[in-house]
Length: 358
Image (cartoon, rainbow, N blue to C red; front, side):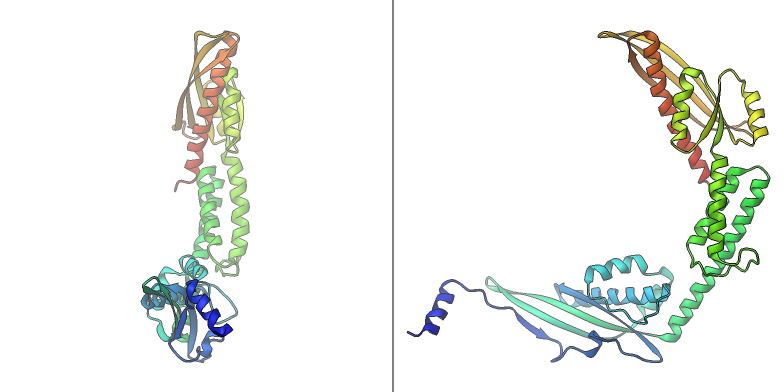
């Protein structure tokens, strides 16, 4: 027996795996896999899906990939008119991130210009497993694409103009002493400026572009937030530090006062342009011994008053236990724990008011 025959017998004896069989939809891959067609009337976008379980699944995924490219071109200013995506995961992620809802109808109507696929068949046990690598080419009329891009540009200009209007409303509210209302409007203007290209015209002579609006509203919002997070805190000295510490973590600056009445604090806050007066009522109760220490309980009732109206706009109640070597130390530990919790809750409530639509 010859060497070749012996080698063949050995391969069969070892159960050698048969190679995969590849078949293609056309004898040669189409030229558009390497370079998209060029046409004065049409734009072309390609997409791909590798390893699909069926041809239909592969076509559907590859089509979504191509549509995502069309959506990105329509919604983002890029110099190239075509971009191939051969990575399925990249294309599917891009589709989720870039497809614009209002462009969906046009994208769904894109015409399927061509499909190319390769089927890879492998024998597994007594059967065969097929996988498909699929490429599709979509085409869209240039006139329709340009119409959509013009619509988006017009919408961006309207958004930028609305942002300028909100910025000016904020300025008016700030002049009236309503720093919270001003802050809300500055943030709205900032969000609108961020949502459009910086070169977008606003139609305003003083604030001509979205980038100029972005800078102004960002600066104004930062300054207004600093003004909005100021307060006079009326609290016993043994709990004031914990409350103001918690407020400071949220960017609040506080003047602490011990024996001042609410009415005096409100008048002072109004005169200084401070938006809040925070009133802390605290009690402590001694507890029993805990090993070599003693325990205590502190209960806090904290209210935030609007300096302009005197109305209660937020409140928090906290109770905490503490231990120490002396009754005084135990009471201080309990008060500090309760003060940090109450201050944190109150700060969160006041920050939430900044984000409300006043």
